[in-house]
Length: 207
Image 1 (spheres, rainbow, N blue to C red):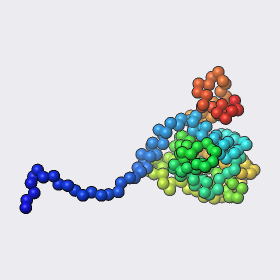
Image 2: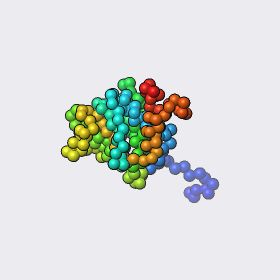
Image 3: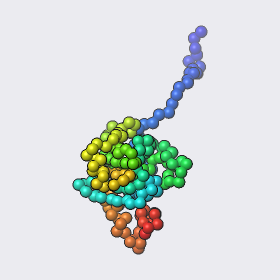
Image 4: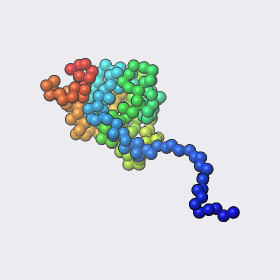
């Protein structure tokens, strides 16, 4: 029997859908509501609140910015979790957030999408993370792009010149916008503050 030209052909369809375009996801990180000031405060909160640091230091040396805290440091699991997108890192504790993306976005913004190195000592292991934001955006890939490894002897000796006990050092190439952001936090006066929530001394009650 020939099928009528006006008869509708019904196709039985069943398939699986749902994927993540990593290039689009990376590009979308810049639209999460973070500016340089919010990114800076995110890293401050990670150190002061989450890592319970007593001292928080910024060094600008050899065209690099170092953010140093003497907090509890990170082990292999916590440094891996740090770069896991949308992981509920603090769902059961009193810390600075549960979204699981803030610290990563902060590093991306403050480094101007360039290489970031994170060095940490938890009292047992000296460990580092290599985060090539420039390469990730170039290749449109995030998954498995971050290297976690033990520090070598030279790196450990360098770390000890900055911290005598546990803590974390974040290192990335200096850039003018981030330098201005950090500098303004330490030079600003109350009558010049346009947004109170953008400054470390006001947010953390030390102004």
